[in-house]
Image (cartoon, rainbow, N blue to C red; front, top):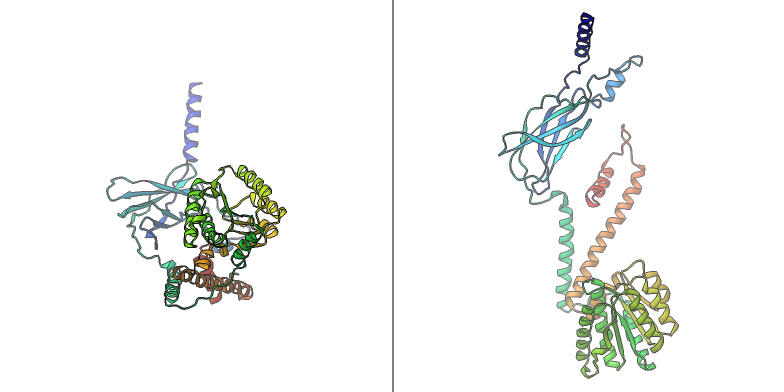
Amino acid sequence: MRSFTIIICLLLVAGTSDVSAQEVAPPSNLNVFDVENDKGEELRLTWTLSADDPNTETKEDVKEESANEPPATLNNPVVGYLIEVKSGNQKEFAEAGKVDAGVSEFKADDLERQEYSYRVKAIGADGSFSTATGISAATPVRQWVDRSKIYFGFFMLVVCGSVVYFIEAAKAGKQLKVRKIAGLEAIEEAVGRATEMGRDCLFIPGIQDINDIQTVAGLIVLNRVAELTAEYDAGLDVPTTRSLVMTVARETVDGAYTSAGRPDLYNPDNIYYVTDEQFGFVAAVTGKMVREKPAACFYMGAFYAESLIFAETANTVGAIQIAGTAMPSQLPFFVAACDYVLIGEEFFAASAYLSGEPQQLGSLKGQDVGKFIAGLFLIVGALLMTVSQFVHRGASGEKTGPLQDAISFMTESLLGT
């Protein structure tokens, strides 16, 4: 019995040694490159896949195999690669990352500007590692100019140059043509109507705080409205949802009345804080609309669900309404219920339109040049994409030729996809 047990153990040991997995073939040809057009924080590694990687076999190799002979199976296939790194002040290699089988590149980031040495090992299905590749080293280099964005620098140079040119032209007395904005032209009509009817003008500078650019734009329009109410001796009522907006609005109206030569008409109690709560503010303002029936209502700033409530309530009391906002979701309500609406950029152009200052007019015209160039790119890109559907395809089925190169540049560089 004892002899039989010994024989069984020997057979088991022999069988185990026969099925032991073979060592994984290592990857080769490791190269380390500095990543171009970066801040000097990245390196890129490439290598040749291990012979035991299931993805090493090429399509040509498959075609050459006999249809009756299935491809050979690997005893210990590669399941991934281990990347190890050693910086200039380290003695031992440490793990930098892992990638899956079939992947032959790796990007190391968040590096310092010093030399880094790398090596790569294949990982077998049993968890074993191959011998390492040869060591390859490189140092991240900072590029002061991102050459892939030179076109953007040229674009900015053209736009900024246009702004400077138009500002200087306006200072020299040249008349810069600005398209008439019906909503701004109608402000005087609305204030005049309120004066004739003996009613107040209601101005709401949105429901956001002073740090919102739409609130600032609304207060610029408020300055013009206040000047006209002072000139025509009409009442002006300005409820706000933020205390800071109230303070700035009071200073704006005070300055407007002073510049109009009627500082005695200024009453700070007409510019007041209601509440930060959205629909509490709506209830207070709409209630005042129904009671006092203002002849003209101005909505200039950022609005949300209250836009339609304000507009419909003022419509029921017969007020003329002028609105301006850059909120796309609220514009349809203002367009449907108000007499005049400043849409998007018209609202932000109000300051240049109303003041006529050379700096603001020049900036407005310079921005128009940038918009023209952007629109031109859109048109050219649309035409290129349309024509590209008819270009010749290469043997691999991919579109080729200078036209496709131009499309690739626009999509990859200009659009950044």
